[in-house]
Length: 554
Image (cartoon, rainbow, N blue to C red):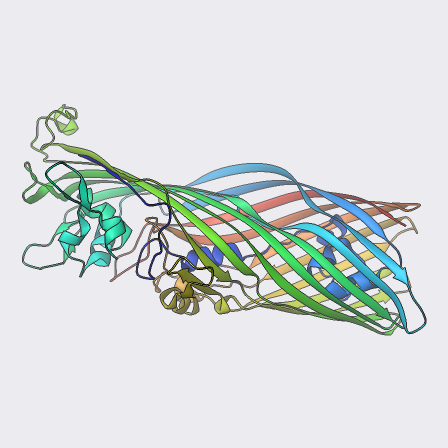
């Protein structure tokens, strides 16, 4: 059985629809990483009170006012990532190597007078986050099926609303994807017989898994993309004591997620020969999903650095949320097969699939073409404070604290054709509060000047988990979008350990840094529900990066 589902170019989805912004999308697009110049990264990013580095234009804009002159610089990042996916049934490992320009920019300074001593300005490009990640694993046996989850999700939707209708000429007169508010995953599953009507229970469904079913699950997810930010800052130096700054950030985002999920089951509830009833047999399906999100946004930053005595600096900065305009695109496909174990075509009986006999076994494919819509996202606001001590013009010790309000993320869905035709998605916004909490970041940086030209550096950066423990444990529903129910959430503290070296020659500087990142997350093939535990895995990410910066001060 094969049906081609035609999707309109633009879908104005209500919150109940599968094709809408989701809790997981908001979370994925709002995260930040430790990125910047080699000096910035080698000191753990602890520059809220220091300033004087191109990277601080994206952190504390008052840092631009610390400059005594002008500067131009660029940074190259060579990073090596490894992903270890662990399940109770084994583990797998993947490696990636990436090279990209991490940061470049310009700062200019003009000296004015005795009160407001100088004005500085700057423009920089910086990578805020990278989405590259691979997750794949195998669970055997499983205690339930994705189809059972979809069956529960689909309860209350009328079977007639889930299927296509045709006229005598074979033209589609009713398309459930376009003409109903049914969940897209329910439509895809019902048309591929992954779920079936529950006898004696109107508008209720049952999945393939039943008592006595033995099954396994295989999953493979590949994520890639980036968030880039362009910063434009202005700052002033008041009497070499107070340094102030304001800045605007313009962001560019691209995110792609390809996922594959497969189940194979024996003694499952399958469609009987002829398709008019359900019997016990063998079943298998492969679900493919692609998601692509692009967009741009802006944020505003303001900060101050105070130097009460020459050896002490205190810094404070606040960032508004980034306000994103996003465009989403999805497609999905499922291959399926169900057959009676007594069938001569059953591979267990030495047979093979015969598509000329579609009733037994049943082999088919259901898929969608590209679907797209727009949304709005407000990321967490950020507030940070720091202190730095200069010891004898030879050493620097700097400490930062930052808070990010992940539970304050907010999304809107599009309901009309106008630019402002967006309304809050209450389902997702309430789910954000159920799943996420505020996150705290502590940064520590050290620098020791061995000679006037040579400096050694070290840093540490730690971010608390921004996911509530109930969600990490799988006790909270997590809303996803499209027909991909899988997701990953951070599960533990994220840490960076770094070190570096810097060398100055006349107006030139050459900096190098090594950065190690450790991050752990929990992957789930779909949300746990009603006591049923979905296939899951623990993913450990190790990130090793060599960062090189070169610049000229004049």
